[in-house]
Length: 111
Length: 115
Image (cartoon, rainbow over all chains, first blue to last red; front, top):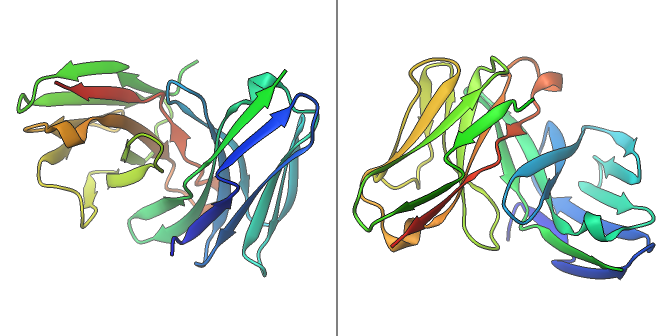
């Protein structure tokens, strides 16, 4: 079983719909990241969370440390939101922090 | 302004021909990471540097080496690329400071094709 599990793996929505992507993890973490990867490969960090909730524009991320669960919400989705969304958990070690990644959720938003 | 720069963005090499991928950063971060990401898979950490301290992952093949001549630059050397090494290679950096600052910043990636 992967240490970081995302669901769903693939998600297709119509423009304007509210979208939720879920992430569950099984290890102790210092923070959780939500990342966005567009075709072409570059990764952009959307959020870094260690507790509670963060909001940036139409994106909202929440984390429940006790339940080891996080969600990424997109309100009023748009075709330009189409991308792979990756959940990654961060653990600290003597040689610095390291990320463990989920498999990603491929989101397609149709006009 | 680009903070983590990878060159080239696309690299084509021949089976067995050594190739070097480059990463540079303007953030003055202590830690630099190299990840390999194959199609439809999560990124996989190959190794990372904490300053000059090299940390290799246990399952990283010997074919992959890295150099960090100074804070700003880090190189990934693939000594004898095989067809299975075709992938996106991502460089990332983090400050290495206390936890709250340890966000990783990613470069745009280099897509390697092996013919």
